[in-house]
Length: 294
Ligand code: GUN
Image (tube, rainbow, N blue to C red; front, side, top):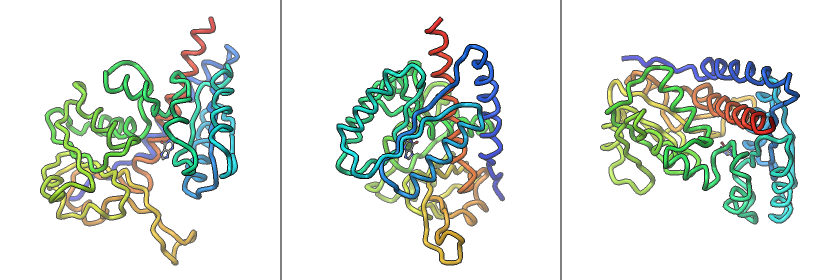
């Protein structure tokens, strides 16, 4: 078998077009959806993610307020900026790019964001709403993965979904969403402490790799005909590449693509969907503010 390559870029463009139309509909009301983007320090991967998010916002007719803060920024300074943005009626979403420098508590920073502006879906209130199945912002990468499965009509009901990774940003929320009634998968979470990983991943009808280790998932760990979703974005040194590194997913792509029925490439798979879902959360927030100010 040779896998269908899931074109996350193309699917994300459809979502971005929809968001652009919705942003256009708010314009006559004098509302420009706006995301505040905060980056502390100059971590290269974070810089590139933040730029991509801001570019996408502009292309969808939305605004961004860009806060590039020095690595030495204190937690108190960051908290005071968030307080100001929480109170700013022209700001509909607040995104603090993670990871933060180790002298700042991510937990305190995320908790300081008004849940109504938490378009990343990381605030404990957003996480609680997600787990309870109540309305609220869903985290962008897990939501993007679900959107891909839905778009490709990959059967999820009764399927065994194995999630490799247990991060707060991807693994934990994704496992939770896959078990929702409307998705109805049977979910197993694996992690660095899992014994005989391959024995479990080989049972997966849907295998989601979000461990952050390049090439961790080899072909012998994949069941014939599985859907393989690669959330990993690893920079691997490569002197022949223009930037001196190459992006690699958590999946050993070529051999796994021979065995799977569907596979996401890296780049061009899940990544673009993360951004599209962020835009969707921002527009939803702006639309709600528009209704509330009537
Ligand atoms: N770092 C890695 N992924 C993300 C994300 O989706 N949002 C934020 N804020 N930081 C991240």
